[in-house]
Amino acid sequence: MEFFGYSLWLQPEGEDYQEFSSLIKQLAAKYHGPVFEPHVTLLGGFPQNDEQQVIFLTQQLAKRHTTFAIQLKEIDYEDFYFRTLFIHVEKTPELLKLNSEARKLFGISNEPPFMPHLSILYGEYPNETKEKIIGEIGREHNLSFYPSVITVIHSSGRENTWKVVGKLPFAS
Image 1 (cartoon, rainbow, N blue to C red):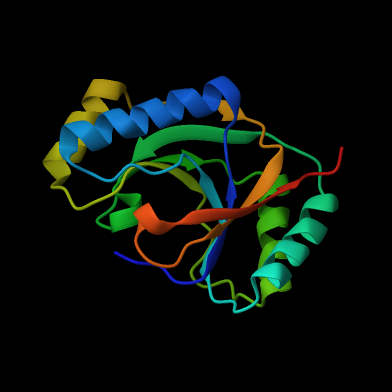
Image 2 (cartoon, rainbow, N blue to C red):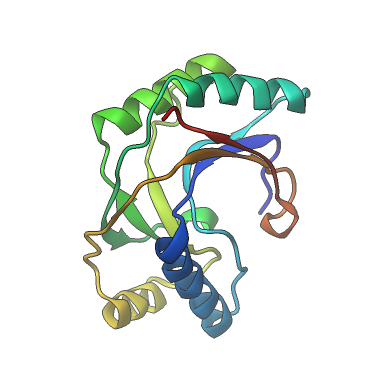
């Protein structure tokens, strides 16, 4: 599956990053899926021709906000490649405001509605496999992390070709 354009991510750091990265790699190896960076998509797959403009606007957005908790909840799944297996993220006022401002900056409608999550497996798997994985790692994951930057991703093509083009820090 492919996306086109740019995406804005909020990523765990330090030990939190290592924990989620390790889980993603373990699941990818065991179930023959792709490896990808742990992240919560703030705004995904929006078209834009001017990369410098994307970076500039994201920098302006980040400067107006300070870091806040990304609160992870329960694991769930869908029959959608990028949400095969994921952890729901609580829709806190800070996260909703940041998403709303990002949508306005980049002229993105509210469709589809914002569904914050941290994916742990991409691909197409039967529901039985997804339930088996949840049984092994547990459904509840009441964890949180504090991102320090908004990461700008050039997300054209398949996930193995995505690249970081900017990391814009939140205000101190």
